[in-house]
Amino acid sequence: MAIEGKDEQARQPRIRLGMVGGGSGAFIGAVHRMAARLDDQFELVAGALSSTPEKAIASGRDLGLDPSRNYGSYKEMAIREARLKDGIEAVSIVTPNHVHYDAAKEFLRRGIHVICDKPLTSNLADARKLKKVADESKALFILTHNYTGYPMVRQAREMVANGDLGKIRVVQVEYPQDWLTEAVEQTGAKQAVWRTDPAQSGAGGSTGDIGTHAYNLAAFITGLTLESLAADLDSFVEGRRLDDNAHVLLRFDGGAKGMLWCSQVAPGHENGLKIRVYGTRGGIEWVQADPNYLWFTPFGEPKRLLTRAGAGAGPAAARVSRIPSGHPEGYLEAFATIYTEAAHAINAVKNGAAIGKDVIYPTVDDGVKGVAFVEACVASSKKNGAWVKL
View 1 (tube, rainbow, N blue to C red):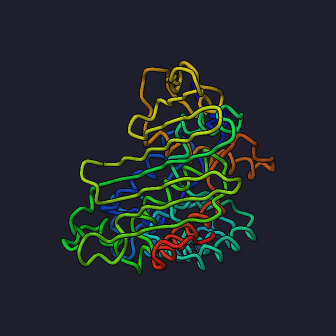
View 2 (cartoon, rainbow, N blue to C red):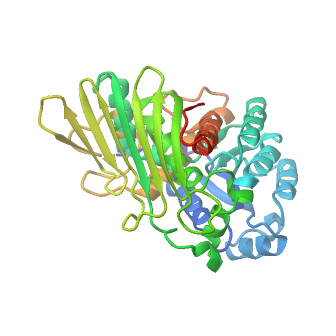
View 3 (cartoon, helix red, strand yellow):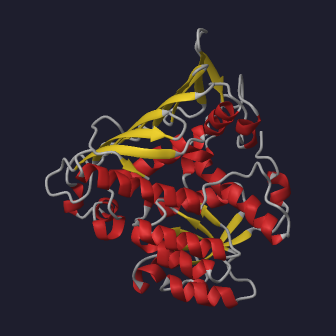
């Protein structure tokens, strides 16, 4: 099955895309480029791909960018591309967190749509300022919380909204990894160095890197608003300046309670994102490592397995499924869903049409909530796990 409207989208010209960051040695940059091309909605035509002009130009050359559109800085790219008749229509920002605000501001103020990696910024003050810039811009802002793009996550969201679980009581979400079990940042490993540096990452370590994903997923599926939290953060690796493990109790508006665990020092867990939601009428469970399935248990009845393109899945899952049942869709496809939703929205704006109600993507508001979550966790932990309101 195809994403609804994808054929119509494909008949329109590809959206001209630029990229900030994501040069040589950057894992997430390659992921964004693949996601942008998967449904044939975007064409990468310009870039400022690294923090130094020399590295940026070399990275762009490796990707085959036109030398005249291979920039040494994102500001240079924003200024020049905004003046070109065939300049970029959207930009992907895939830098360390501390660059997001300044880079996004440059493009939003010039009417260029922004697709930005999470978390929104490295601190709440910048997040709020970026929201103001985004709200005042005619351009769209899309945040790539890519796990919201999975078909069975959309299915879970639809089931909660339809009342299949009844009134939500309990939300359990976890995201454990093991890649920072040792002090790999001290070996110069690029991905670890900036993620454990407060100047680049912000106040949160595991909370900012993967805790924000877990929190966003819980909010996306349940539709609940977090009212307050109590957090216990640790930096288990000696000398590490940011948290590498967090246990967080959650209180939602309306009375639901939750628990969130994120860790990057949990041997045996490569990327263990998992969520369980329980209500008065039933419960659901979804595991990112096996994403094409959703377990649903109506209270008092046998457990049911819902499959992505087969038994039990509804229109929300079908809309973002690409291939028949029995063929797995995974991480890259979910990431591509965010880009394709962005394309639907960008083309609607370009054509003077309303953005369809079924076009769903994380926004700058979700980003502000994510950064607020991180800072609340840090504040709570400093107060020995005291409850902190968001």
